[in-house]
Amino acid sequence: MPRHIDPELEGRILEAARKLWRNGGEKSLSMRAVAKAAKTNTPAVYRRFRNREEILRALVASYQQEVAEQLKPCRSLQQMAQKYADYALQYSEEHRLMMSGLLARMTTARPNFEMALSRTAEWLGGTPNEHRRLMLAIVSLIDGFVLLKSTGWVRDQDMSALRAGFEKAVDLLVQNESGFRSRA
Image (cartoon, rainbow, N blue to C red; front, side):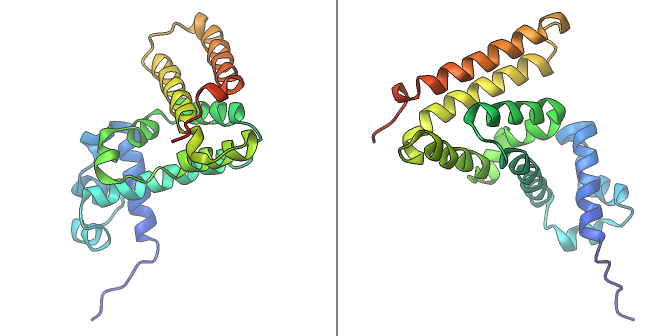
């Protein structure tokens, strides 16, 4: 008798992997744990994903899509920085995966970074590549802001000052964008 193909299984597997990652990070994500959480068996997981890294790639792609949906309606680089920082604070484990060395080992694709470069060129003129230094500075600022908050280094009573400082720093970077332009 032929095997019954469950069209929703891949979605259940990814949702299970998402929950495992969110609750326990990398150490919690094994093929067996994913199968159990998805209410299936390990061979079924392997039929859809060759290995754990394929699951991680699929997770990263879904997280990147979520971020893209947050960034698409933005009308300024400052708004994009704030939206991404908010996402990263709300979904710290997902952000950690997207920013990890693990991701760099699996793919060179940075679709949201490339989208931000293109949008920056639309808003500020020039070519996307001319704004690479500016965008890297802003990404560094976002990641620092998120790290300070997510690690608990900043006390709750200082959070509004941290947020205001972050927003002002992004404004200053954008206002001085010509100093960051790369002509190479």
